[in-house]
Length: 504
Image (cartoon, rainbow, N blue to C red; front, side, top):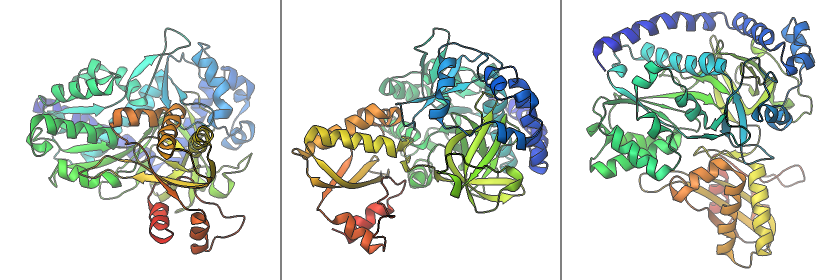
């Protein structure tokens, strides 16, 4: 893009920076004002009438009158929205739903996305991401090139014709304002394609010809695209194709396993990496200081926050605290109320505050055991159900198991590695591996997407270990006894490495 456009955008960003400093300097007042506005807008909805929103005058009263909900608790209300009812959870009509995995009861979960959420949460969050980037890199020429977003796809809502369902990235791209469409690549038709092999070919063809200055997306898919572009072009690194490239905006999974790969793709200290916390439920925060590794919590983006102390997570009626009550270096489950009609909704993420002036966080895990190195969101319920079905099909009897990631490296794709101990081993071990993979795909749409034609995840690697292996490991850890359990899933390789090196 022409330099004058880059200059004009930077001037706009300078103005927006004043607003960001406003919520950084007045966080509690910002959040209390936002809560009052959310309650006012939703007071005439069925949920608002049911929970007496017109009578709520304080955040304390809000927490007393409205229950903390999980997706499973909330789904009957969301299902009504999916089927076309309006004024159920939010005052404006809902025609878009973002899809993700992680629910106990279904392959996917569907999160309503209102027009207010798109404008005042996701897009505002994106603009503030760019504002903070320019604040960190004032010499940036980001808008002299184009933004490349590696996103998902949309599909019709099976319940009604005038509604769409898709990955949050696809929902955002499908609704982008004209100015943002002008600043991005590839074409919207290519960006929203749902067949990955055809899509990656089109992405590579279109984007290789553009002056791409920045890339955003989940590292897993970004790696696949960049590898494909290099393979087709015959170039050594991405800077030979996009010499003005300067930033990768990443999120959804830990970036740590991917650092060395991106250094190989982009061998320059002038390339920056900026983390975002943008989920199906909303845009929660961003790395506001590139010299730090924590995230500024967005406080005026249509989301009111509460926090469940870690010792309350398993409680049927957990007590929450508000922003002004959090303590540094304590872990909390994140609870949100949003301008899409999620009310006191337990996201399932665990965060830790690293700063309270301003409020900054780190994502430290999930409220449940999980693997999410590649964006697959594999939760314990998925794993236990899949392994039970595989055992049933192969006449095996399970004793114990644990699983973790096989990280990407410069030579190999990623995957999942399992250590499984049986009382009765499967009649056909190869069949067991295939069945476990098949059932995981049936239970978890994100895992299924990453496994598609081995594009992002390879077939699971399974170690069939002798009886007593996990007993030996628990004894080694000094954790023999009824209260100690083998962790089923981990987002690191720590348990795998210990068992494989010390107990076999």
